Image (tube, rainbow over all chains, first blue to last red; front, side, top):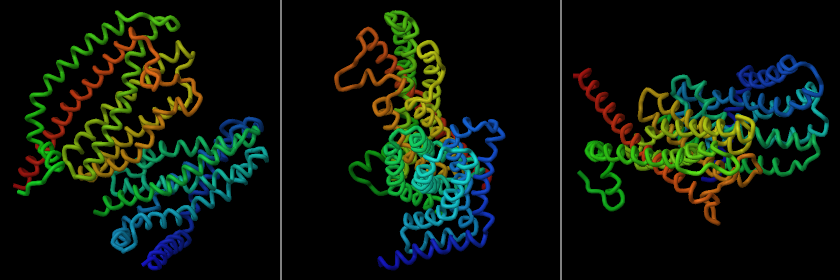
Length: 226
Length: 249
């Protein structure tokens, strides 16, 4: 039984990854949005180095938040529309594990590219070099939480009218703690304050989201296909 | 008919919408009267009879609206999430309606707390708004209410909206302790709790009593409006059922 569950989970991850790679433009969309949104800021606030360096952590985090949110639609919506979600729900795989598998695949195709693009953007914005390591660490801890919390929102709006607008209203308020501590970690590194507390809080948030979000998203999925 | 036993029987007794309509029909005038009397006495005491603060002067009177509104914002969210959980677990139809009817009332209380807080903050802190933990978490609470209302009405089938928004209400419940303890966990501009604390209230009886009276008035107002709104929801359902029956013959 246990081996069956593991292989089924891996099969779902493989399937989602394959789908993401075959529709390459879909998963690249989030990164392209991320880069473009950040690149807009030097035009918006002017190219002054001090200002850009000061706001760089916040800009990168907000853009990552919005990019993650925009990519949520891919998580369940296409499977819901073509009916494969119903088959996945009917499969013997526990529904919360299905959510974990889909979230993991989603994070690998959107969160990791954001992570890889962020140092380049940090250079463009002139982020002080002390902040680079913590920016990556904070994003590495924060983006999985974004995908997990987002999965709850994405599952809740399945079949709703104007689901895309709705998901932002549901998910962005819940993203605020991740944003606050993510930026706090990078700011702490730049100003020389201890960065340990915000990093630990981000890790704690991820642990809580990992335990609770799949459960809530599974309940929402059950309602969506019922 | 099956006869459920014990707790379920007591709960399902109130799940009957017609029984609720009969009960609430008698209850609503009483609730309205109590609310009116409490507000009349409470507002007079708070705005006229209570002493001005030695530091804040007359502007302390904003407290008598701000603090009960903030309490009710949290109370309504907890009540909404509780009712949503009951509706989700026991498929209790009245609980779904209570949760749905509570959301706009709670959102209004939250907005009232935010607006009176801004009006109070301007003379006291010198600014309408600061991004401290208490204010930010209450703002998030307001967005959670808006999300709940939007999700509840986003589906063509009302039952699906009730269940989806119930899950959202339960997810958002994590914010309630964050709001309550935000003034203790973080060093913020917003003052820490001064009424409900282990050492007893930190404010003088001449201000505490009108404050508690206003809190009672706000609570009674909530139950009054809730009863009226739930009655409205039940009647809207009945009209919908009648229209459908007419349409399909």
